[in-house]
Every structure is written in C-alpha cells, then in structure tokens.
Image 1 (tube, rainbow, N blue to C red):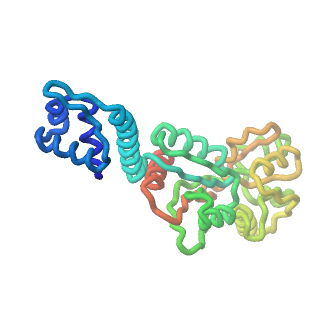
Image 2: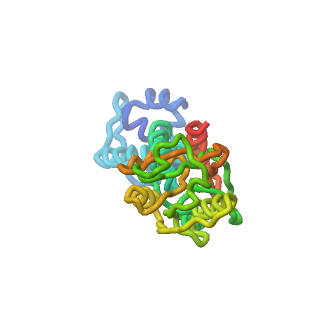
Image 3: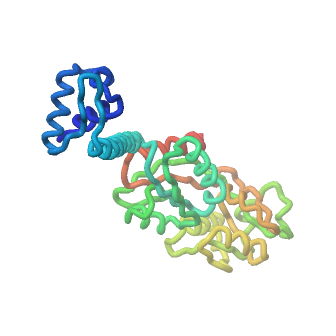
Length: 292
C-alpha cells in the first residue's frame, strides 16, 4: 500500500463519484477504479458499494475514510513542518546574554523575533558571564551567545554585533555625578564594584586594564555576578563602577550614569555560535537589522 492509494480512496470516498474523483486527481477514471479495487483486495475488505448510478461507502469504508483523512492530513502537516524548519521559520533557539545587553538589546530582539519569526520558539538566559555562556554554547545548552570578546574557544564562530561606549555608574550624590563626562583618572581614589574576576568576567578584566593604563590598580570593594546587583550596590554607595552604555537601561534610583572619556573607550558585543542552521541564520538576520 502506498500513499497514493489513500489519496485515491479519499477522493472517491468524499466525491462518491469516480468521474469527479478522477477529475480531482487529474487521472483517468479506469486506472482509478483499478487502484481502488487493488486497495480492497489488499485490505480484504469491501470499501464501496457500486451500482450503475451510485457509489456508497460501506460501514468499513466510512471508518477507513475517516482514518485515511487523518493520516493524509498528518502527512501533509509533517511535510509542511519539515519545509518550515528547513527554511528556518519554525523551530527553537536558546539565546544567552551578558548582563548589560539583557536589559536593552535582549527585549528588543525577543520582540522582533516574535514579529518576524512567530513560528520560532525563543528561550532566553540573561545575566550570563562570558565563560558560562561559552560552556553552555559548547554543551548545547544555548544556541546563540551574546557576550563580550575575546572569545578564545575552538569551534566557536563570532561576529561583532556592535560597540558600546563605557559609562561610569556613580551614586547619585557622588561629587562627580553632575559632570558631563569623567575620566578613568577621576576615579583613581574610589572604591569599585566589579563583576567577578579571575577570568570569569570580560568587564572585570577590562576595568583592570583601563585603570592600569591610567596608572593605578582599582580598589575593589565588592565583586558580584549580576549587573543588576552591581548597579544596586552603586546606588547604595558601596562604590563606583565602569559599565557598558546599555546598562543605563537599568533605571535604579540613586544611580547616575556619566559617559567615560575619551569616547573611544568602549567594548564590543559579539554573537557567538558553534553551529549553523537556517533558524540561527534567520535570528542573526533579525539581530543585524536591530543593530545596524
């Protein structure tokens, strides 16, 4: 038995007329009659009652027609789903994101994906430090990572999404909070709140590097894992912080964000992946449109 036998029987069972069924199938009537006879012989069941003027379904034929319709509809849906997945307009994608982009780019991306690729199920994991993202990426926990470079891992492909300027996050009553911009040297005598160091955070390494360029070692008061916690501690007066500009989307009372000079001080955001697929390509296309 082949699918064409089911399609032929469905046409006859729904039309109850061999001539109309043959026209619907775009085949001649005699071969259609032969195929239905062959199906009945294979099943060992009479499906149709034929007279010179009418065609009727037997009880077995009615039951078989119902299941035939279900099977053919399921086959068609499966074929359609396979085509949609191959085109990258249906499927699943898990996205990891660093803290600063979690509060700015990530909501925009999820909304844009819902509008452009409604058939793609998106799951997100925000506030992930770069090493945790790379581990999840390699293990298959996420499909796409939005993180800060450098990314030094075999098999991981990256592309730059955008470059973010750096800001000083200051307590609202800080002596520098009213300035139009501050320099790294202005923060020389301050206590710092930073992301966890020892290779676990790109931003922690960057803060240490730019402070070293200014001729000092930052005085670390507190290390944290989440950007929201970092900004909250700044608001509490625990210290100051250097953060990427998108962090300003965290509008927490008691914090002022002041641009860090010179304006060339910045940090890239990259999209990283370990495999290519149609759905990942489409997600990256939406991401590029957002960040152009």
